[in-house]
Length: 200
Length: 336
Image (cartoon, rainbow over all chains, first blue to last red):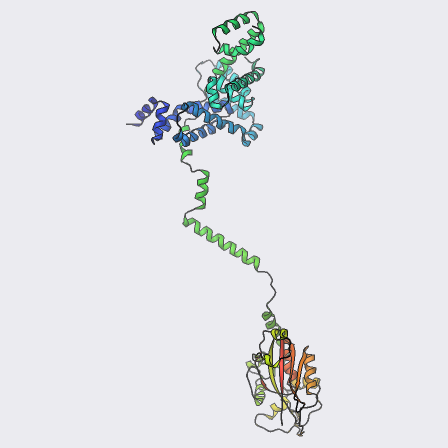
């Protein structure tokens, strides 16, 4: 079986099978899981942290933790919920770390421009340059508004309003009760409204 | 339904999270309430914009970077690898470190310690040697047990290299504790006894110098020398190097030592910063049998030199130079 065929065979397998294959010492199964989830996890980390390099570090940390603990994964919850949980906790730790706090104090405009440039580089299907520019400016404002939220609220807003996760899954990912999840999300939305009402 | 109840449900209304009944009630309220209508419009835009945010993709080499990090040793493993370096690297490094530490320790502990007493005594003696005038270099060699006539020979050995060793201490002495019964043990412990047997002439005193001039085997007539003082004794030792001295013959028959012999010994002892410890007299003749005295080791040579002026050395034990104080026992013998 050549490499392409092998890749295709992995892509047909669901998460559970890939986990079982990995636990049976198939390293290719782990590579398949990484390929499947790397964009989702990277995007989640970027939305929470607001910085491309930080998101890359946290995303890599997430998959390294997955690799080290995958042998003990008993699939009580879905693999996506499990990996999201790891990613969210990794981002939480990064947000609360001293290095991150110092970096955020000296965050320069250049860094924001660098992040925006990367966003613009993402392929946009609209085609109209004006629309692309307006869209990128809107995204910049939204991203900055989300970054201004406290860490806990920011994660919940990202999971609910950007990722579209249901409340019960968010509760499972974060380990917070559903009622508390809803109240914190409502509080976060109120704060975002004050910043975004004149923009939309 | 009023605004207070409707407002919290608007997000769920947009997300289709309400029942059909709740939906219809909210819809009816919105038609009548402009404020809630504006709120609903905002919520719809908010949801639309956030959900349409472009997905940020991971870097293309993301999987490769993850693999590289997985193959990288952990920080603990790195430390272990550093500690347990290959022996080819570790041994030279540790050897260099050990040598450096030894140098440092050696440098630090090389303090100016007090010189050992033996060292002091040795160099004190050496200094003493330097101070002695050239004339005194002609002392008989006391390191060997010589008979009286040897003293003459010894005095002729001035130019030999051994002459220098004349100043060297006499042969090692033997501890003779039994003869110092009354002494304090403390003194005995810190001193070494040095024994001399002196021949005190009962006839006119024979000076060392006279004997030399007379030469071995010759009988000499001696003239009684001038009353001898300690200063004369010193002067006499200086005259030993002179080629001539007058010989006078006059026999003085005496049954005992010259008057003042003990006094001379006492004086020499005091001059050498020593002290008389004991004088033993014969019960029968009431003549002094021996004198025990102590002097500083550094003054020993000068003391012996002066003592030669008092009488003839018959025998002496060897001298141990590793003490600060010397205790001498001078046994007095009487010539007929």
